[in-house]
Amino acid sequence: MPRIGLAYQLTKNTVLRSGYGIFYSSLGSFKTTANLAGFSQTTPIQASQDNGLTFIAGLANPFPNGLFPPLGPSGGLQTNLGQNITFFPKDRKMPYAQRWSFGVQQEIKGGFVLESSYVGNRGTRLPINRNINGTPAQYLSTSPTRDQAAISFLNASFPNPFFGLNPQYTGTISRADLLRPYPQFRDITYPDPVGYSWYHSLQSRLEKRFAQGFTLQVSHTWSKAMEATSFLNPTDPLPYESLADIDRTHRIAGSGIWELPFGKGRRFGSQMNKVSNFVLGGWQLSGAYQRQSGQPINWGNIQITGDSRTLVLPSDQRNTDRWFNTDIFNRNSAQALANNIRTFPYRFSNVRFDAQRRLDLSLNKTFAITERYRMRFRADCFNVENTPVLRGPTADPVNGAFGRITAQEPPRSFQFALILQF
View 1 (cartoon, rainbow, N blue to C red):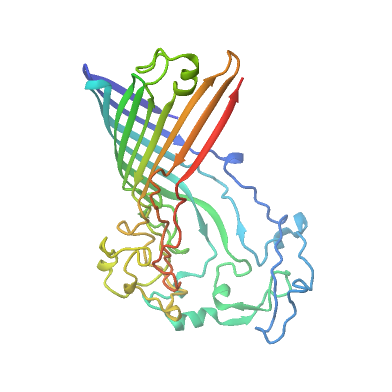
View 2: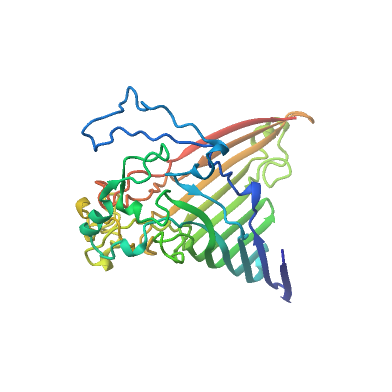
């Protein structure tokens, strides 16, 4: 696909770099899961047909009527009656991304190179699963609080007019299902290429090129990622623009390699005998450090009844038992929203997981046993400082652990390897 790059030497030690390219996603066998409609069959457990007054199935015999066999091609148009349907549109559009950058690279004293670039990305035609068989929006509640009248109206049960046409049908059906555009089916979804995303960043790095047994790289990225890759409500005509799940405002990463200055050909011990050099010479120390902002918390369709400006707690009040202000949420399960048009956003930019931070070190050496045989020893330590990195808090207000963090990333660990090469 069309790509172009440009480099211009502005001065002896300064270079301007820019580029633009289009990158398409793959289609076909690399991206598409086969549609097995008619050849894959699920048998649901139906314990009772009269809301629990009597039971026709139990743990000893959960399928008294046997398993539903797949119909294969013999089912014709009745193959998916009463089931979910997934299909591919006739005219598929290939998603693509446009990427561009502009930066300045400067060589400074001591063999260091400093570079800073603006990097952007725009994703287009991203596929989103669209449900064309949801309950029409005009029947859903627009109340910001629980609308019991609308819930009762849509959940009311009626004799199922499709009962007997397919083993999937039960004796009753809800009004919400009867109001679907195609009530003889459940959800009907297909990948609609209407999604898009965009990303802007300032990427800077400092590199010490390898010299005298030493190299170092440090980089910083300041970025923002946005996306419109899902529908807030199944009936929405356009996807919802939101902070992306992959957004990390800041990221610092560094790595380095240091050939310890001991042994033959190095600064100290260049006259070592073979035995001493075999044990003490030729060691190499390397490390990698990373620190980045936590990912934004994903929220469900919930209610904030207090002052939303107090959602973020001061650092001296935030802890694993109360990561954000839980007092402003409606935590009454009897007042949870249902059958309503969602307006609550997916994510907030100022409420995130714990920041990620970690230092890893590695010490290794290759022992030359003979001209043919070499032994390589490697010792790795992950999370050297044993820094506790917390995972995300529970974001369901009706959960007893709401706002709490109940897990963390693995603590410090070691790994040793001895490899024979020949």
